[in-house]
Length: 79
Image (cartoon, rainbow, N blue to C red):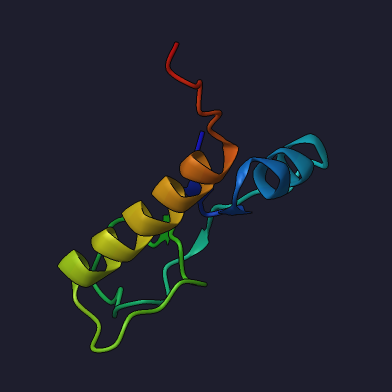
């Protein structure tokens, strides 16, 4: 399983923070929040892409999760 959340990257990091009671919810810092009703979110601010685009970030997050999932996969030999 590959996972990237506002708590961190990977099962181990996320589980450690969840069981320690850490919250991934914080004030939004990626864009201006003036005038918005919601100012708190569970954003992934520790992964960056250059130049920043929402598509680029989604691709980067998907790549990170896929890499972890593949690292944990077990290949069964064909018989």
